[in-house]
Length: 170
Image (cartoon, rainbow, N blue to C red; front, top):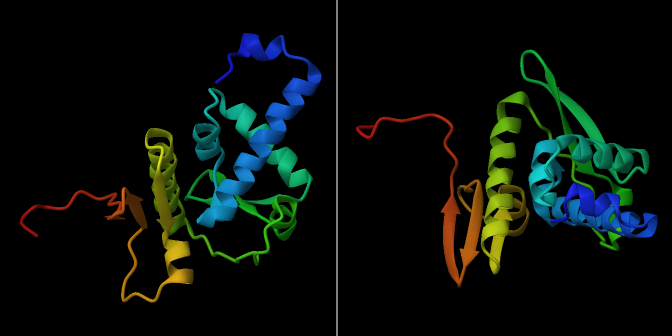
C-alpha cells in the first residue's frame, strides 16, 4: 500500500493507473458473486485508510454507470449500498446477467458482515476459494445454504455468521 506522501509525489498518469486498477478490483469483486457492497467494505478491500476515498471512487463509478447506488434505511440514517450494472459487466468483458437482488434492512447488515469476512479472508490467505450464498444458490441445488462456503487446500468450510449470542444450552 502506498502512503499519502508517496501518492502525492506520483505523476498524474501513475495516480490514474492506481485508480483504474482499483476500479477493476471493485468491479471484479462485485462480479465474482457479491453483487453489492458498501463504502466501508471497499475501503477494506482496497486497503486504503480513508473512507472518503472509497466513497469518491464509488461515486465516480456511479457517474460512469458501472455501478448503482441504493440507500437503505436502518430505522434512522440511510446507508448506501453499491451494485454492479450491466455496463460494469461489459466493462470487465464478462458475459453475465445483472442480478436483481432485493436488499432489506433486515438482511443488508448481515450480508455486509459476511462480505467483510470474505475480504479479510482473501487478504490473509492466498489460495482460497469463497462462494457466497448468492453464488451457491445459482450453481448448486441444496436443501439449505450457508452464508458462504470457503475452500482452503481442498477442504470445504461452511460459514455461518450469527449476530446474536445464543445459549449453549439451546
